[in-house]
Length: 443
Image 1 (tube, rainbow, N blue to C red):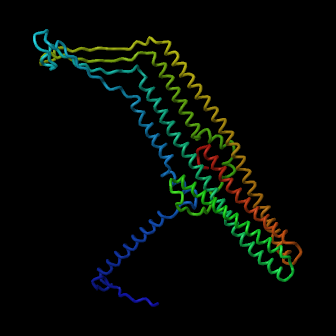
Image 2 (image 1 turned 90 degrees about the vertical axis):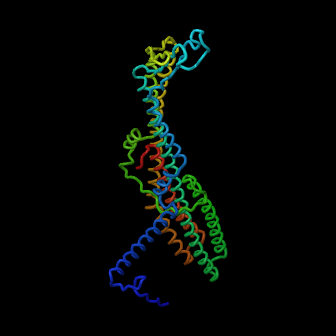
Image 3 (image 1 turned 180 degrees about the vertical axis):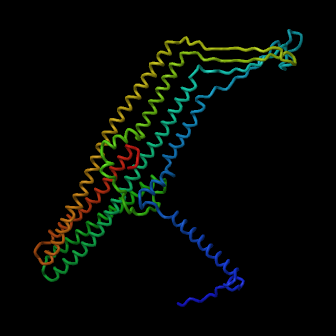
């Protein structure tokens, strides 16, 4: 259909050559650009997640409630640091003396009508160094809370990466199985043609139909598994179980061999592991608490200033000092031995955690290398061989040199080889996610 030409005029009918028309044209172009940018931004915001793991991690970092709670606890622990080392609030006391003026008048509680009134302001002062040690204990708690938040995030990130790899494996398996179902449909057509020409038995047709039905049954199971994996991913993203997710398009690239060396990973484990950071912060807190326990051998001081009012004037001032007497030394020795044992336990936990993490790191690294070797073997060796076997079996079956069972077996071998490659790819990424959780860093 021909479009109707529209004269290029302004709304008031001004010709295009005038400055007013040129200005109106620029405004129309600017308005179109703004509308296009708004529409593009809206489409970008409403596009479903799931195509790659990076967008999933970015979304989860903002909305995952478990990680949000750990971050809030970290902020709360940080806010405890200053109050831990602050002075206690001063105490104010009022003392009314001779409220009956020696029995000469009725009792009164007004400062100007009693014999004298003493106002006492008392400030407690801990022994030198105690405030700093209390602040250090609270600071160690804040560092521990921050490390726990990082540990929680590494756990969440590992689950997201694992779920993404599983979704990719299921999606690629479905795509491959659909291709196999299409191939079996063609094989069934070939067997029907040969049967109709008297070149093959009817059992070949039945066998092809049975094989295709089995593959379709596997497809149903895979699609159910895909929905389950999507629901698990949405749970990690704090979304409804049936919220739309894009099909996973790719897996993250594997690091180089140099970055995956055990010695390098062990060094990064000691430096960046959130779990080791938690234990180190606990040991620091235990050491500062031990020092504070030893410092409690010394008394705390309280200073009081008291002006004394008689009638309507301040008649006198008093200055008082008060100290607690640390007589319960046996109790303090028990507290000190407890603090020493806590420091020793914290050090042992660090050693135990490091040994366990190094063992897990070695196991995950071996599993990753096994998955990479399996993928390389399948892709470079088994898969081309299985494809060549299937092509040869198909050509031989069309000429009657092999039976249909041989053809189906060749098809199964190729399918299993391709599925093995997909599983190896996903398994390598899952092992990589576990290694990144252990060391607390992205490789």
